[in-house]
Length: 622
Image (cartoon, one colour):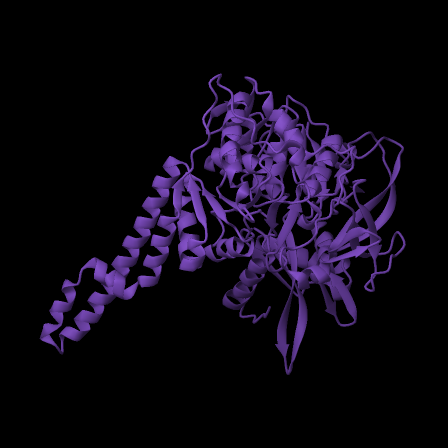
């Protein structure tokens, strides 16, 4: 793919935003205000050292960090150095991080101090000694100390476990053999050698490949070195980073995003979002969520400030917004349910917020009204796009006039208008385009679309195709297109302008057959949403009926009382066709969410099945 000359390179925009420096605060971390000059010096010094790794064949850097300053520095430095990076999340289970390390073929891993214990656990428990020996582990001085400490503690834990097992065996043996006491005098080292040689070998392998990472010092005049920057030699068609999908609709997949893909996407949002140098940006997402880079990059390129949250901020997001005077908030719809649960939406108004960008899940209009009442000055932007298409490519600025009506619609907010960087059409089951007004699968093409999943030819064949020199992606999302007229000036157009507006129906895998009817979970959720302000999720379960499995529609409501469930069950009979009506309703105190804060539908279904069996004696099957 050749990037159009009209589209600025992402790496150049990022480099120029840092190069000029300045006393203004670029980033806030743990109440420390980091100036543009300080951030530039740290990023450029880090890049000057890491750029030496470009001579390593197939260089690929894993970054093990979570909401940290040097984690952010490492990401920015790798992007500017033309070195592919792969975010690793300490919140992920060890098997998932082990899979990411192996599948993405990392050569080096940078370990942030606060992530050392989790990094050690995922490496030592999931990778073979041979694989560990093939990697190089980098950390700043404090990070090396933390990693060595974690390795020693893991070894001690393994030794204690082995000794405990040895003692139990000796006690059993002692009843028959008085000489068994001698076996208790084995040294810790011999026990380790005899009983846990594999984990010891892994620990030793990781220790032997751990080195202190020393960023290049500033020059004599106090400026960072810049000769490392590739400039015109930058390979923009190479993979910039891997983003592993959340796995909320199946097994996680590795999406390979190039610098060109990201340049196209970044140009679109910078032209449309009307960001300002006075803006203060949130940074709530994990580095493994594809929107996380956007928050920092937008802040730096427009000359604003980004605030990295601490643990308290993540638990009290409304305080985070208020204390730091956040003006641009990037989050998922789950925040509305959360703020409602802790009764913030009914108590206070927050004036600083001027733009809220929602992403990740379906957004409901009546929930958005609740948010608007609490954040009255904020533009409310619904955005949509799978990771495979480089973050998002569709957006809708919700008019305040719709939210301030007494009869605010209880419906899903439209996906909205497509970026002009993509081509789209709606297709039937055979892949043929359908006319506006007809539901079908959304197919997306263009240079913003990635080349596919890394080392996954079968998955690529199922999801991607190339036609007329264009990459196309089958989203698996069911939508319907229609013409809409804009009623007031907004981010997606001018008053009086007409455009093709896309509305979400559901996913291909969120459909089920009931008799001869095809039921969309989201369509049922939309109708039930008209009867309650509580989040609703619908799923397919089965019950054994003789020799056959009978499919049933089942609904879960977050935090509902028995009286609410009974009321909704009664009221729905006049709202939903019989075949769409849930046979069972269950209240779940809090919906499970993955690290990207999307509802984990599989975990939710398991909770519903367990509750049905334990509390109601109903045997539901997945």
